[in-house]
Image 1 (cartoon, rainbow, N blue to C red):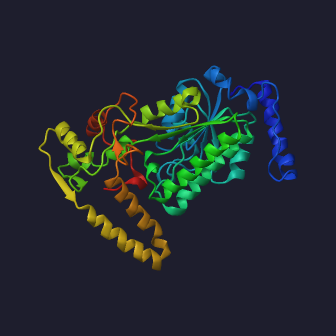
Image 2 (image 1 turned 90 degrees about the vertical axis):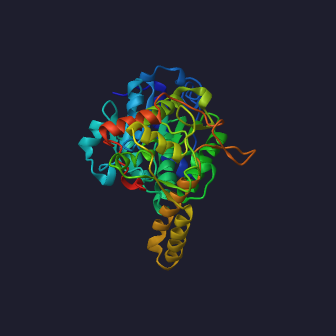
Image 3 (image 1 turned 120 degrees about the vertical axis):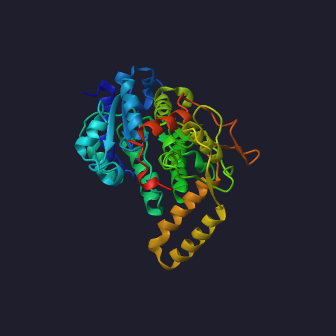
Length: 388
């Protein structure tokens, strides 16, 4: 059972009244008073000093790759966690409600559609308690154009509005470091929502945010482990030195996101974050993999111009056949990750900087590769994110 303070309850029901009556009367603006000790006044200053067992946290995107680990970490720390899940989740909707509840053990699982603001509000209202913070781990699965705006922007915004209506005064957003150089639709969608979070905090001193921008995930770099183990070459673009990253494990990233819930030093900040160790190019990642396998390196180098040609063809065809727009976008996403580093982009030099990319956690890519060699990619399936 999630706990709540009496003043939270007062504020919760005022919000319901405000939403149903005051906002329609005053053109959507509404009126939220400062009750003594209410979340509007108190939560921005005091709730983060409470014990986690007295803090209610809603997690959207809870059944996603990172979301599951975030829910697990928040529960481990003792927070009262509400995990919002779809009725069919997982890769291509293979997991039902029972499987989702099993994966999110320790949390109160609330089934609802985050892309439908009314459905999301009804699902949360049915729980009957206020919210202190929202952690949003939503991301479009493939990066298609319409899906990006539906999820990376729309569903994330729905999460904010639903949380705010129930008294949430802090919002932790899982974004991506690649939004620094926005050439893709999902990056533009994420940036639009980031900007709205900043605007919300500027308009309301009682509201704060933490925008987490991680580098590459281990999973995204593990797709070739099993093929190389089977004797095939390691595929890379150009000479393998076009880009670099400081990959971070899902558990370490989840711990960092959980830190952001209570750490006031991380409030109202953009937080790029990578894993431990030096930045690695694809060439170095391949060499590391071959070393672990005890084999001589064998690479297959693909000219980056091949991708440019293919993207050009699909861009042309998409003008004639709009149904191919997403296919062209997927090609651009692959091209972006083949050439752009997942590191902090230094605004002074215009170059990516490994030194300015913070490190966090303990798990290394070498440890991850070794585990995948032993156990395979069980639980790390790439699904729609497969490139090779």
